[in-house]
Image 1 (cartoon, rainbow, N blue to C red):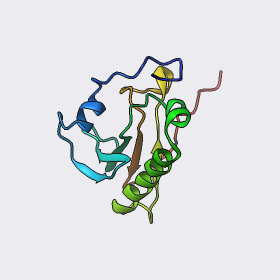
Image 2: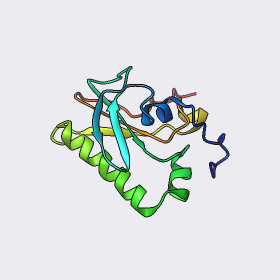
Image 3: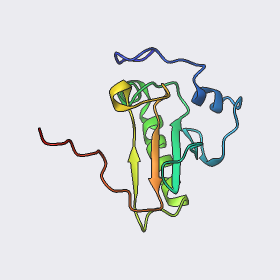
Image 4: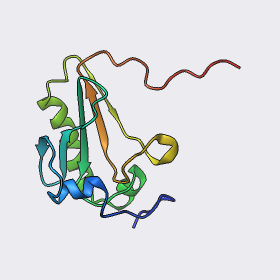
Length: 129
């Protein structure tokens, strides 16, 4: 159960189904803590998702309830994935959308790795009033 105000974890979300092997993915990295795979709707030349193998809704949920080994293993998987993709030299962006205002579409904590080009601003600048 999520420790945030977000809905409880839905074991039928698409990432849970990918983890169970019900839906295929184009894997980049997998270990005991995380699965990394190419996004089906890429927003950059390289766009990979990294998901923890546990049932976590958000970063708060993950940080509050995952074990130290799960947290370390997940972030090591993120780093290993970026390195395997050859993104270190040119640089890359790691992004996590949390909740409705953050644009989270799948209620399973995950990070996006974007790279392969200059990415520009992180968030569009607000127009002056």
